[in-house]
Length: 318
Image (tube, rainbow, N blue to C red; front, side, top):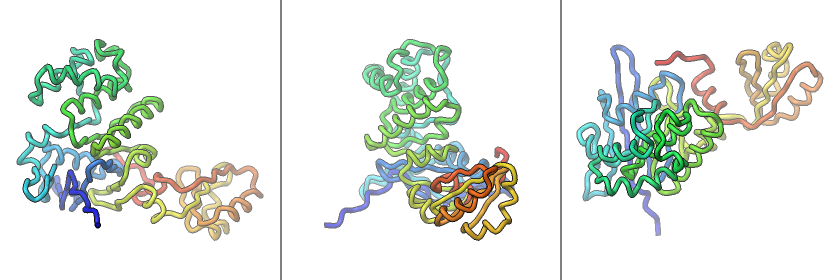
């Protein structure tokens, strides 16, 4: 018996957005399955934030469709922006910047936000203990925001996004500005949500975060889809397996030296030369004759993929 592929919980088709002569999002299509985390990565100005804004009904697309929550042939999907209110009842959102109310305690922030969805106070209050426990903030239930660290505020924002028990979460760089301990705790909470069957659309600048959390990745640049697929598959399809980084006195001269023949390709960034190779051993043996150089041998990773597809030049914020 052949199992049917579940309908996507969220679908974007042929989405485009222009501002004057600039095309910010260019014929973009993707979807998210139930219980899946899709990561969207790309340099500044790639179109990530504009895409999120269109998905939330905050910016109108020039062309394309955005549909949510299809329930089979008998029940039509909801479309943004036509069905914005009905969609947002079943959606959870964490933006780049906190919008928590500083006049309220942690518990009160959850209570007031729940009222926006028309939930009764008794229903919200019954959910608050579990939401605070999920955010590791039970001991801060009555604390004002001024008493919270940055990591605590981000976890409270995530808990607040769950107050309406959403099916889909849109998270726009949810761990920006957090220290490593706070980031790892957020990762554990996001993984728990996926295990519970929630779907997540996640934008991030952290490649380790994208590789750790996401079932699939969508790489954007100049508003267009560069590639899409599971992180490890994309790395294997687009990169050589071994990377040797070389830096130190005289390293840059190696970029055009005979050592190039030992690698499939080389790249230079700052004072480091990157050798991408199918087999690192001959290269490492040759480099051993130059003890003044420092080397790092590692497997290819998602950052290498990102830089190959989008370039190493610094982009200004857009």
